[in-house]
Length: 213
Image 1 (tube, rainbow, N blue to C red):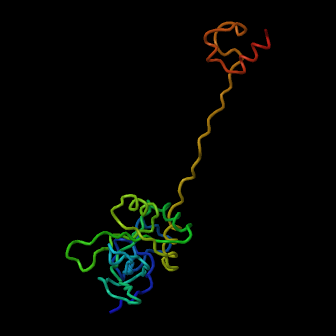
Image 2 (image 1 turned 45 degrees about the vertical axis):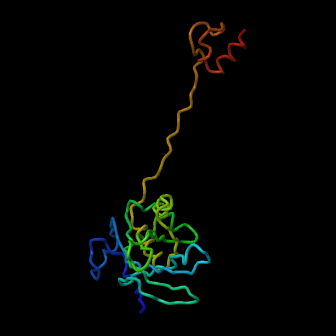
Image 3 (image 1 turned 120 degrees about the vertical axis):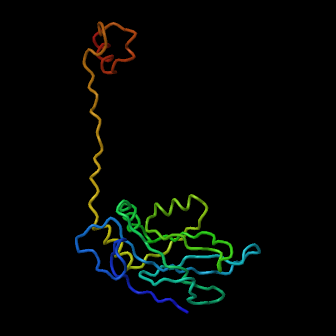
């Protein structure tokens, strides 16, 4: 049995059920989602300790629901349409998506976790994200497997349209310090006489006193 993917229907807000009209052109939704089919490949391992390893190899934009639908088998490796999960974009993560779109190669990231006891397979698809920052958080936890997957052109266009529709971030202006301008008579007493508070004087003041003596 195979799972057929259909092209994405365009951005859809999280509150909209499938099949309703997409947001009007020029709208700036805070959150949108798109179903992504997750394709995993089980590869025989050349190890005495494990029999196989899992790799996320593709995503299918707009895919129908699936539960470990076998796609093909070749040389002992089997590919499955393991699940279909929503790829959710949040306005607050716009900068992360920009970083991802500017990277080469462009990827989304699939997060895998050990499957519950008794499951048909030993891994489960936990999440798919377009944020490299979120993917990094999962990598650092050490409890999940994070797999980069090439971003299809249709998915790239969908994410880029969402990013372009968001308000521009306020321009960052670095605050500059006002240069310190010491007065000619900084400190107390006669500037020509060494004093205990010379340590607080500006070097220019000390040089001026030396020139006067």
